[in-house]
Image 1 (cartoon, rainbow, N blue to C red):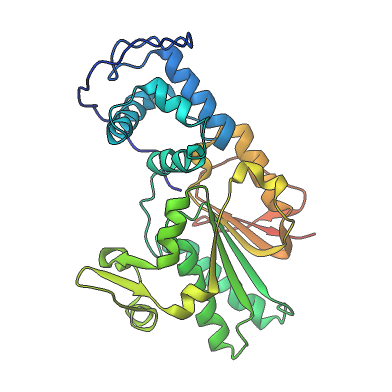
Image 2: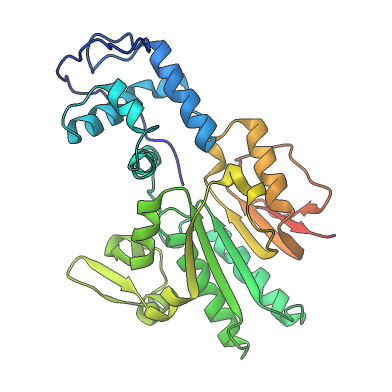
Length: 305
C-alpha cells in the first residue's frame, strides 16, 4: 500500500430516503454525509483494518461511497453499510471497498536506494557464508506485486552470480484480494518498467500485448501472494524471515499501531535478518532485538539477537 488518495469533489447524486430502521443515518441526500455517519465509517474501517481516516479525507471517502452505491444500483449509504455486515457477499464487498480505498500506485524498483541496499545486504550474507538454509523474504503491504517481483529479480541475480542453488522464496501479503489476483497474473503496463535496468527487463519480461508486458513464469513461480491483515500478525504462523519489507504502509495507521506492527514484525526476523520501512514513516522507534542501519538513504534495522 502507498498513500491514501487526495480529496476530490464528489458529483451530485439522487436523494436518499430516510432510514426506517432507526439506525440514525442523518443525511438528506447521498451526496451528504454527516460527521456522525462519517465517524461510524471511520470506526468500522479502523476496527477491521487499522486504517485511520482523518477528517480531511471525508470528501474523498464520500466520493468513493457515491461511486460504489451507484454501481450497485443507487442503493442508499445505509443499505451499503448493512451489506458489509450481512450475507455471504459481505466479505467480497468489504474487499472491494478496501481495494478502492487504498492507493496501489507503485512500480518496479520504485525507491532505488532501498534495492541497492538490499542487493548489497544479500551479497554480504552470501559472501560471509551466512546462508545455510532457505533465504526467505516477506513483502508486507505488497499491493499489486511490483515490490515482491523486484525482490525476486534481485535475489535471483545474487544467487546466480554466486553460483548458489536458488533456495530462496518471496511472499507478498496485502489486504486487498483484487490486488493479489492482479499480482499473480504478473501482467503490467510497460510504463511500470521505467526503473527496471535494461538487462533485467530483457531477462525477466516479455511482451504480453502492445501496451503490457508479463514477468517470466520462473519469477511467478518463485513469488507467493497471500491475503492478510497486518493488524492480525499475532494470529499468523511465526515464520522467521531474512528480509521483511514494509514500505509505504505504516502511513495508514495511528502512531501507536505503527509501533505495534513493527514490534510484531521484528519478532519474525532471523538473527542477522533485516527489516526495512519507508523513510520517515516512523521516528523514535526502537526494539531490543534490532539495531538501526547507519545509512541515511534507507530506514532499515538489523536483528542482532
